[in-house]
Amino acid sequence: MITRAMLLAPIVALSGLIASIAPAAAQGDYPNRPVRLVSGYAPGGTTSLVGRLIGQKLTESWGQQFILDNRPGGGTLIGAEIVAKSAPDGYTLMLVDSVHVLAPLLIKTSLHPIRDFAAIGTVASVELVLLVHPSVPPNNLAELIAYAKGRPGQLTYATPAIAGSQHLATEMFNLAASIQARHVPYKGAGPALIALVGGEVNMYFSTVATAIPHVKAGKVKTIAVTGTKRSVTLPDVPTFTEAGLPGFYGHKRPGFGIVGPAGMPKAIVDKLSSEILKYVKQPQFRESLINLGLEPTASTPQEYTEWLKAGYAWNIDTLAMLKKKGVKFEF
Image (cartoon, rainbow, N blue to C red; front, side, top):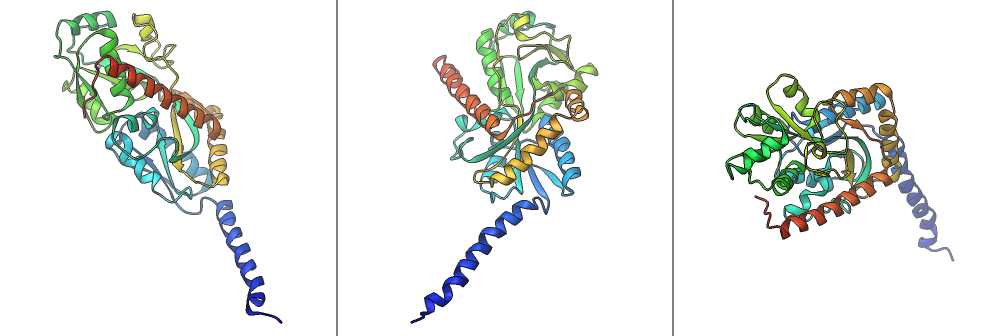
């Protein structure tokens, strides 16, 4: 006896086969519509520079617009939440920096920087340079520390986001130098740097990339750079180790990289990663990054995941140390 179920079985099987083929086909022609590249910062900072550069290259390669979408606020968590809750189809991505594995430790959120995102790859890394307004008399690190110690609580420092890497770096500087500079947060690197140039604040840990035009124009003074070696674009500025604070903020941090929502198809992650790796190895693209004050840094999704995990662990340990020292972050 032939039952209705027996008659329908081939149709059901065919439907399942079609359903499994459709997503694969969609992945194969990715991208077939514009892609949103979210930034957690306001326009004008290093993230915008990197976002426009990588977005332009991806647009040229694939003929679909990669549109930079600035969503500042919440220590980049506003943008991160948008991405984490988006469909994991590769059409909503995020350009992140080291703040990605810091902000969730300082601001209440349900987001996890590793679990809730798919790591795609890095583009570049960048060091920070401590800048002061020209009205601040000191011209080197030793002078600045002595000047600040004589004026506890009087000097102010800007940050582009609460709970960002610049915020952490300055609080670590306060501790390492035994000074008491006051925090003034802004919504993005652009506004923070404008505040320093305009004399609203006295100090700012800027990325080398966004600092260069203002340094060359003489609108700010440089004190020292983080990292283990001098910046190629600011070769006359000493590292903190050279200037008298050995090892200060010299750990290796996750650089600028691209992530998507967790659950992205491996085929799309690999396609994006392969294309980005290709760019970072091209001499012209590398030169563009270097001219922006960035160090070209290529990584696979697996390598980038390990970088993020290491950065997250370092931040946990560092914040625990700061807490023991009585350092409190302002929110």
